[in-house]
Each structure stands twice: as C-alpha cells, then as structure tokens.
Image (cartoon, rainbow, N blue to C red; front, side, top):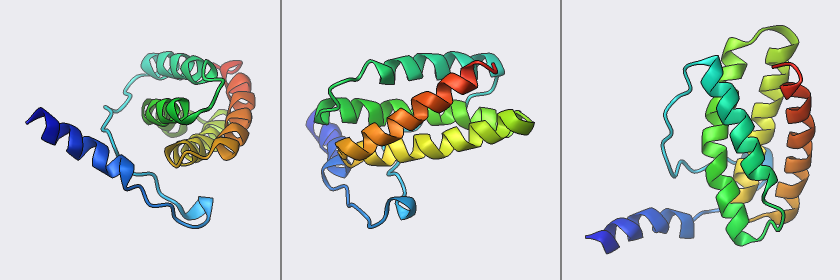
Length: 133
C-alpha cells in the first residue's frame, strides 16, 4: 500500500508536460496548503520561505524540486498580501505573486536558468516589500 501511495505521488511529477510559452503554462497542483488567514502568519511565512529559497544556491535538480515545493506555501502568503493590502503595497504584492508563479513553473520543470532569473527578480522585490512590512 505504501508503494502504491508513493507511486501515485511521484507519477504526476514524472509525467509533467511542458507547455509552450512560460506565460501560458499553469502549475500542476501537487500538494494542498492551507490558506493564510492573518497578517502575522503571512509575514512569518514570507520571511521564512524567502530565507529557505535564498539558501538554495546550486539550483540543481534536487534544489529546484525543493524550491518548487516551497513556492506552494509562499504563494499562499503572497496571495494574502495581494488580497488584504492597499495601494502601492498591494500592487507590489501582486507583482511578487506573478514572479512566484514563474518561479513555481520554472522550478517545477527543472529550468535552472529561468528559475535563477525569476529568483533574482523575486529577491529584489522581496527586499523592497519587507521594508514596507
């Protein structure tokens, strides 16, 4: 039974289909993460997950997979900000949400160069964003 459960979990990862054009791709939902419901939780998750991703420096297949799974929780944090902030902070949160989605897709598809490019953008935006929190 454990082998079947593992197979059912791993099979979608192995059969991931790459769509043409990054902006048209949709991430595959491999795991479900609970919604973020408070500003305090959003900040804690944002800071922790940003730090987790920043610690990934090789960007080999294993780290890209780790980044991919980190983005699930990070997306929830950023979505909370995008829904609950106002003005320039909300606009920045929405911009970050787009970049996190690009990180999710490129890391999910093991695209090292694209992931690096999106991470560089993310870290610049995240630094700016944290200064507003």
